[in-house]
Amino acid sequence: MKPAPDVEKVRFDVRRGVVDRSSAELEINPFDLHALEAAVRIKESVGGIVTVISMAPSHAEPALRDALARGADRAILLSDRRFAGSDTLATSYTLASAIKKLGEFDLIICGEKSVDGDTGQVGPEVAEFLGIPHVSYVTEIKEVSNGFVTVASDFGVAYYLVRAELPALLSVTKEVNVPRKPKFKDLMKARKAEIEVWSADDLKDVLDLNRLGLEGSATRVVKAYYALEKGREGIKVKGDEGIRKIIDLLSSSGVI
Amino acid sequence: MSGEGVLVYAEYIEGMLHPVTYELIGKGRELISKLGGSVKAVIIGSGASGRAEELIHYGADEVYVYECSEGVALNTLLHKELLVSLIHEIKPKLVLYGATPWGRSLAPRVAAALRTGLTADCLDVYVTDDGSIVQVRPAFTGNIIAHIKTVTTPVMTTVRYKVFKPPKKAPSRNGKVIIREVPADGDIHHKEIEVLGKVREKEVNIADADVIVAGGKGLKRREDLKLLEELAELLGGVLAVSRPLVDAGWASKDRQVGFSGNVVKPRVYIACGISGSPQHLAGMKDSKVIIAVNIDPSASIAKYSDLFVVGDLYEVVPKLIEEIKRVRGKP
Ligand SMILES: Cc1cc2nc3c(=O)[nH]c(=O)nc-3n(C[C@H](O)[C@H](O)[C@H](O)COP(=O)(O)OP(=O)(O)OC[C@H]3O[C@@H](n4cnc5c(N)ncnc54)[C@H](O)[C@@H]3O)c2cc1C
Ligand SMILES: Cc1cc2nc3c(=O)[nH]c(=O)nc-3n(C[C@H](O)[C@H](O)[C@H](O)COP(=O)(O)OP(=O)(O)OC[C@H]3O[C@@H](n4cnc5c(N)ncnc54)[C@H](O)[C@@H]3O)c2cc1C
Image 1: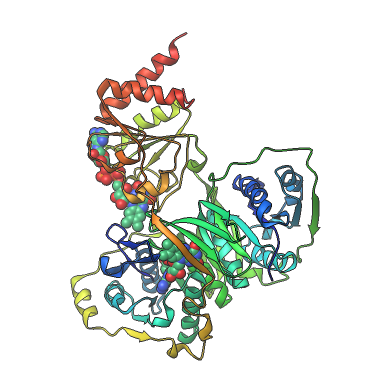
Image 2: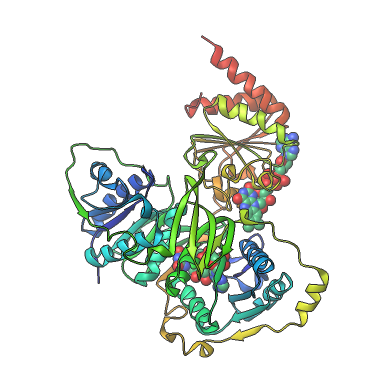
C-alpha cells in the first residue's frame, strides 16, 4: 500500500523533479483501498491475517492507521533515508525483501498503480523478485482455495480467467470491489495501535544495502514540468452559433 | 553490456497483433539513425510465425519468432523467460513495449529479472546529441511531464498507443526471420499460472475509436445516454463516459475515459456535461480536436477544448443531430 499525496493539492518542485512534501498530506493511494478491501474480504471468507506494508517517509503513519481501521491486522512502515529516491526497481526490491523477512504468506495484493508515480510496475516487479506468479489488472477475484487463486484480468481486448498457484501477487483495479468506509470505533482503536517501523538495518539479513534508494535505482528523473499549463486556444460560443461552429469543425476534421 | 540497436516486443494476443507494434517499429527505425544497430522484433504465440513477414514489411530487420501451443501462448512467465534469454543473447540497447495492459504487466517482470530500469507509459523517446536515451512520460495523474534517463542496460520503455505514427507498409522490404523452439509445455515452471479462457470481449474498444462522444454527470438519467449514442453513431463514432457514470452503473468500465479507465486519442472528442477533472483529462487531452458542451462557462474543460459551446446539452445535442442530418441530406 502506497501512501500518496492528493494529486489535486500537491505541488511539484519542477526544478528538483521531486514532490514538495509540505504541500499535501499522505493518504492511502486510492487504488490501494480496493486492494485492502479485497484482502479483508478474503480474510472474512477463508480466514488469515492481513498485513499492510508501506515504504514511505515517517509522516505516512496516519495512512497506515487508516489501513488498520479498514480491517488490516498489522501495519509495517519501511522508513529510512536510505530508501529515498527509489525508482520502481529499488522500491520493489525493498518491498520484496521486507516480505521475505515477514516469512510465509499466501497472497500479495496491490493496487493497479499509484496516483503519483503512476507506473503500475511495482506489483509485477515484487512478484519477480519473490519468484511468484502475478496477475495484473484484476477486475474480479473469483476464488481463493486449495492453493490457487482464480481471477478475471483485463488483457486489453478482452478479459481472461486466470488461475495462479499460491503464493501469488495480484494487482487489482477499482472494479474489483467497493471499499467500505471505516467505522468510527475502528478509527479510534487504530489511533492507539502500534505501527511497526523497519529501517534498512532491520532488513540487513535479507537485502543488499547497495540496491536501495537512489543508488539502487535504474531510472532518473532528469527534468519535469507541469503538463496542464499548455492548454488549447479554445473559442467559447453560445447557442446556434455553437451548433454552426461544431458543424464547421466536424467537417474540417473530415468527420462529416 | 553496452548493447546495440532496438528490440520491439510485438504484442500478439490470440491472433491479433496490437497496432502499437507497428508504431514501435517505426520509432525504432527513427532512433537507430542515432543509436546505431538494427531494429529487431520478437513475437511469441500460437501462429506467430505467420506474422513475421508483416513485421519486416513495417520496418523490422530481424524477427525472432517463438511459436508455441495455445495452452501457453498467454503465459506471462513464459513470455518473460523467453524475453530474458533473448535479451541476454542479442543485447539490445533499447527494448520497446506497448503501454497496454498486457505490456505493462509483462515488461516490469522482465525489467526486474534483468535488474534494469523501466519507464512507464511514455509519450516520447529521443536520443540526445551525446547519444543517451531520454524517455518522456506523464506522472501525477497527468499533471506532470517527466523526462527520464535510465542508467542500466538495456533501457526499457512501455510506450502509449497512438503517440507515434505507424510507418507505411513496404511489402518489398527484406529481413531475416529466426524461428526459435519453445521448451515443451510445462517444461519450465509455467504451471504456476494458467489462462483458463476468455471471460468476455470488451464491449467496445474506445482506444481505437476515431470519433468519441462522451457523457458526464451533466446527464440527468441513464436513458439520456441514448441521445449521445445517437450522435456518436451519426458520426461513425462510439459512446464513452466519465467515471461517475461507471460508478453509478450506467455504463461499463470499457467505456470509461480517464486515469482509471481508458486513454483515448481520437480525431474528434466531444465532451458533453463533463467538467474536465485532471483524472478525466489524463485520458483524453491529447485527442486531435476537442469539443465541449457545458452549461457552465467556467468549467475547466474549457481550457483544453478547441471549441467550447456554452449551453444545455439537452438543447445543443438534439439540435446538432438535426443539423448534421440536414447538412448530410443536402444534395
Ligand atoms: C515524475 C516521476 C516519474 C517517475 N517515473 C518512473 C518510471 O518511469 N520508472 C520507474 O521505475 N520509476 C519512476 N518513478 C519512481 C516511482 O514513482 C517510485 O519508485 C515509486 O516509489 C513507486 O512507483 P509507483 O508510484 O509508480 O508505484 P506503482 O507501481 O504505480 O504502484 C503499484 C502498486 O504497488 C504498490 N506500491 C507502490 N509503491 C509502494 C510503496 N512505496 N510501498 C508499498 N506499496 C507500494 C501499491 O499497492 C501500488 O498500488 C517516477 C517518479 C516520479 C516522481
Ligand atoms: C483515483 C481517481 C481516479 C479517477 N479516475 C477517473 C477517470 O478515469 N475518469 C473520470 O472521468 N474521472 C475519474 N475520476 C473522478 C474525477 O475526479 C471526477 O470526479 C470526474 O471526472 C467528474 O466527472 P464529470 O465531469 O462527469 O462530473 P462533474 O465534475 O460533476 O461535471 C459535470 C459537468 O456537467 C455540467 N452540466 C451539468 N448539467 C449540464 C447540462 N444540462 N448541459 C451541459 N452541461 C451540464 C456541469 O457544469 C459540470 O461541468 C477519478 C478520481 C480519482 C480520485
